[in-house]
Image (tube, rainbow over all chains, first blue to last red; front, side, top):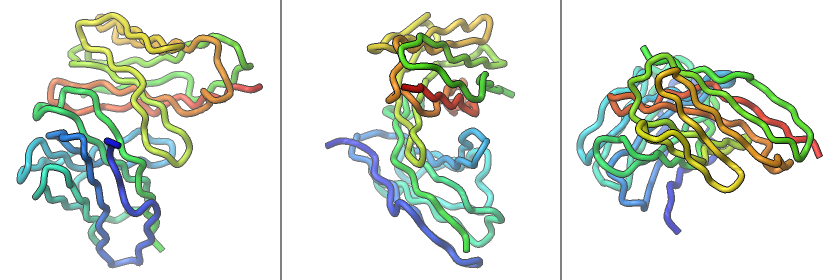
Length: 114
Length: 111
């Protein structure tokens, strides 16, 4: 059953903690993306990766970090430097390195800061 | 800077009605346009992808059109059903490869 999985579904973080959100895909896609969604706002791009061991900052990368050690995995770390991390986080992937193909999304992780 | 706008923000219709959702973008230099559906608390489901060279795409009761020169796309839903209730998002792929999203139209279909 091909697709994108994200875990956990819900995540609670205390102030000052780093947390890592998991994203795995078995679609053999080259490109992977992380977006953040806030109520009343569209999706905003955090980071993206077009190939293993390479990634680029998106529009709101401050306070976040990523790695791409394997083609199928693109974890996102929300650091304590992110001032307002409470949001819905969505991972996506697409075929091809240029990223011009259809994007497919995972089910999302809802992060809440206590 | 590319901006994507969706109007209206919310729409309520009776079951069985045909309806049109609108999406406009400011820069016509797009690579493609994608329509998504999002149910509350869920991820995005891709509905239709229109390449810049295409005028429309159809999938079942859904038809999406693209007019690059005027910076507009529409999503037509025929014979709406309560199960169509969701938020519909359009996104344009710029020549940098990034998807730029609109804020969505929340649709409610009443039985």
